[in-house]
Image (cartoon, rainbow, N blue to C red):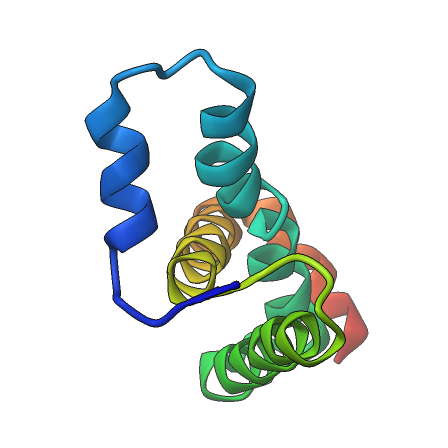
Length: 109
């Protein structure tokens, strides 16, 4: 299975209005939440350089989605890519707002 239409799956889940179902929580909340740590950790590893952390993240998610398609485990879904990226951005926003994360970054330099 695959989906290459942006927001197709996301709109289906929001259209169902069953926000407490396990499918909704796993697909929407899970695909965002699981990738929040990458938005925090990759900038720390890349010394705060978003121009390095973001392409690295996007490449990793693309490889993950392509492996699902090729190996027929799960499904290739452009909406997963969108939600995963939203999780990265949420994590990056936390990284930028929490001073103790910057202190860790400064100690690594």
